Amino acid sequence: MKKNEKLWFLGIVAVLLVIFTFTDLQISKAVYNPQSGYGHFFEVFGELPGALIAVFSLAALITTGKYNVKWKAILLNIIFGVLLIIFSFMAAIMPMNYLGGIKAPVAGILAAVYAIAALWITKILSKEESKSLRQAAIIGILTFVAAIVVINIIKMFWGRLRFRSMEAPYNEFSLWFIPQGLTTNNEYMSFPSGHSANSAVIMWVTLLPTFVTSLRGKEKHLKVIAGTWIAMVMISRVIMGAHFASDVTMGATISIVSFYLISKWVKKNTSHVESESKGKVIKG
Image (cartoon, rainbow, N blue to C red; front, side, top):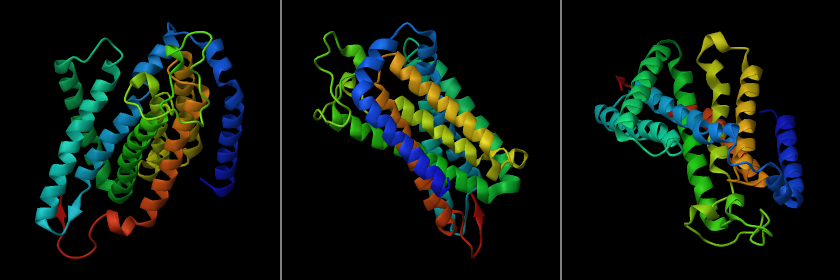
């Protein structure tokens, strides 16, 4: 993201947050519809691309691994393998939480399909663009983890009640920038939006041209696709009463900023994360 784009983005976010300070409640009252098919669809699948990016990234870390010490290769592949299994199950389970409950056999099959498909695809891609693929993989997994960790920590300390749990005259409504106290009750975890944050991990697709040659020159198109998905998820969360407009704005912003900061850091330190440059190389 260029400097002028950063300024425009942060400026727009700031303006939106000011507007939503005065209109959060009115917007939610106007659009709330828990029966919305549109809202339910993105409630179920809105976070899935982010989870699949994490699965793909972990698979890529396995298939592109090259180390000059055997024990290091074994240890890291075990760690990445375990994480691949965990995140594959996470990707399988996420939609089920909103589809009548988790079904273990189905989750297991889906997780296996996700993991095997990711390993197969990354193995093919790694033959030509190993370094770029590994760099994108590091960015992908760090962005997804950052979204989950940062968002959930803020949620617990902010304690903002969700609109769907309020009743007229909405005396429990609170402004987005005023923390309400520590909580572990999910209904008091409105700020910021986890769905919006996890959906914004899809910004990672803008890195596809770095290791998929057929997509080079398509960066702007990928940004539009990613931005559209994020916006649709954000709107859906307000419609479902799970979040206020300020919640979804902050959730998406945290992930987008994290993505660009992590990308900058990883690219700057490529020599430290890609592979060992000297000695005998052992493929992971």
